[in-house]
Length: 484
Image (cartoon, rainbow, N blue to C red; front, side, top):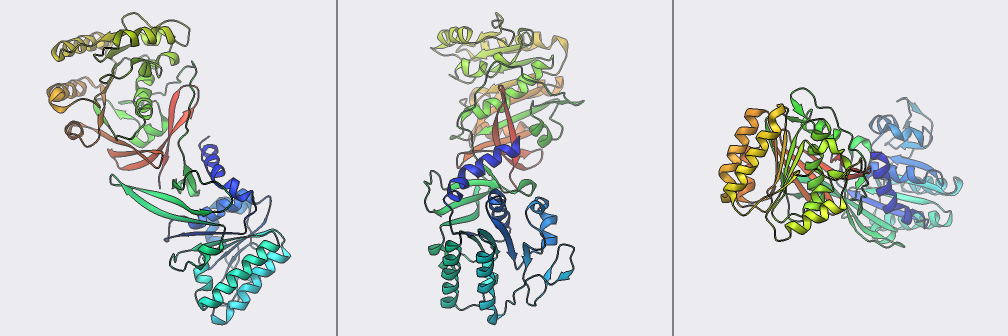
């Protein structure tokens, strides 16, 4: 499922360009950026239309297939060539054989040109990756190099071929003016999180709706990450995940694995949210844990944020539970002048999976009196806790100030730890409340939006970074893609 999603993102960006039969593409970036992986992913996407060749000065085929096992499906000894100073090339089993090779000394310019031209003409519709072009052509004078590049492109054009140049020398930019597309791979830093970025500097013949993307090399593939613009949900049961002993499952296998078996009982979880984050992502991440708990025959409380629309919270819960599940849930609305209208809207729009209405008394209204509200929350907690199972309490505090909740936050953390429950709170990044909450947190997570991609950074218990992908399973769920 995940591979299909990321392949879709790759195809959406590169397929329109490849469909116009381009002649040449330049991929540039520093060592380790994933240039070779991107070039081979492109090769894989067009291998049914071209005769493919990979020509390298750096990586033997033997080493390449160890790093990227999937290349064996499209390359072999005769199509993956490593060029060295001598006239022998490395074969698949590591031995030397007599397949074509090029002497890369100064006198080898003609040999190099002849070899590429020969493949373009005799192989017909050849797709050649030159990795790296800098090393192949570094001994050639600039004026002669420019002539070679123009000659190769002319032959490729005349023979329906394509050349992919890989470069680690951005300053050697003669190719940038000649090729049909220029792709630059780099790294960006935001909020102390490093992300790999792909920039489309040029792409002839296609509309560039967006020129910068986040990608990962996880699993040996060049995986591009794009948010889905729309994710549809229908009334369908949320399938709970079993919690390991001493832990509470988050409702996501990926998140459980990222945290190490889920959330330890008696923990405080803090989700810091940036200003530009789509709150649907934050709600789904937190409410998946609530859903999983009540679907696992345990209790949960949800405290809506200030002026947070009740229906937006309940849509993530009610249609994906049975009426029996909702007996273990209490939802508290914040004071709002729209409270009665929101309450009526939620009851009119929503029903459980078994077509029943929400239970009377499941939703309770908070007032403008903090002390009265806290007493109501404590009383409700005691009633739900009668069965003694691990409870999940989720509070959206993104609009709260530290002075309003400081004492109650510390008290709540103590109660949760003593009773082996889980307290989950959402706070706004770079605020006093966030700083105070993070000091209490056993699990500290940050959610940000970079290049239209929602990034989840786990600060505690162990640092790791993921792209968040909403799943279209009919119920609210998500996947985490490691950003490596």
